[in-house]
Image (cartoon, rainbow, N blue to C red):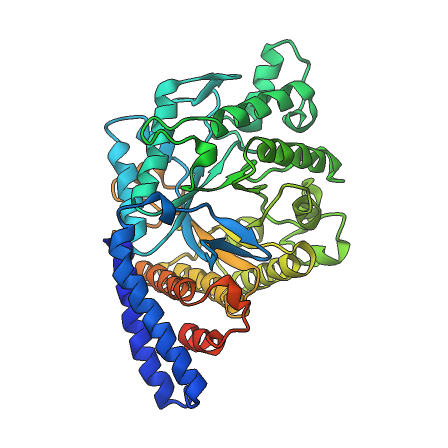
Length: 462
């Protein structure tokens, strides 16, 4: 019902704009009129057929694939407006909080969001998925099954992250603790990336998750189109090796490992996007000098065989200064544009800005500033979209339902408390849904709809 509402809004906007386009001199030729008519028919067909799709016939719910610098589903572009809610599995593991998982998907769907990034790990912690190497809590695994099955009900695809650079939910530090408990003499959390035993622990976890048969749907994870992509790790850093060689070797091995088990799904690394030693001319775009010393290397890391698309995070308030400033907005724009350019020219792949936001705890914060920042991110994506560029979408950090204030790190967006933000999200979803409906990859941006799409997406009345 909710995404269907976005389609209806898209059709209404389309009809309004086609009328305005002809009034403002955009649609003067017969070819333009034919494109307008065909586009209108496409949207009407999309709406009329959507009720059938709500039944989720398997033929309609296909894997997301990559063609050049675009994501595609059923040979049509799939540009992403999505969100992060990392704690879904843990909430689903308790009957008293499981309903919040459904609320997240229902509310996200109501504003047209189509992708959620969440954790498929919890190592050695409270409600751990993996209690010790290769030892799993079946009830927590069933909770992850529920998350995947519930996402499908609301037409939301999942990016599932497989480990954490940070100690929250275990992360690489927990793997090192397990190694030392097994008699290894490990002295750094970065041994996670290099020690063969810890690598074997991680690869065993990957194998277990990818081969999991969902107890709700009876579909193996590696066969499930609900899963958009696998993420190797949330924000990997290896500060013990600023050259980047240690992390690069790990990425190469683990991307290959995932692809060997599951060649159908897309793979991404989970990087923040810092430029490193292989591209000294690009380090000017980093938020600070420390970013060049954390062992990551945006272009080099994403050239590893098996990596399908690039990930970038956007946190001016964490990286530059906590105090809110207009300079943060200019950084966000230049940071995004640099990575979109590199994804097009050097990587030949899509890039998703997989985390972005601003904390309400920052000095000088107000909701108007947050709306401005979100709009800036969305507009930068759209500037790439209109050219068929590599800017493939963005994921808000982070999206919460009502009644989960205890999980808020300052970045939470609750729709009921943020009507202006909700409208901005809805508008971005509508624009991208309209574009995805109106053109397919066979057009290759040379089709007669190109001018029409630009006018619809960028008409002032939107």
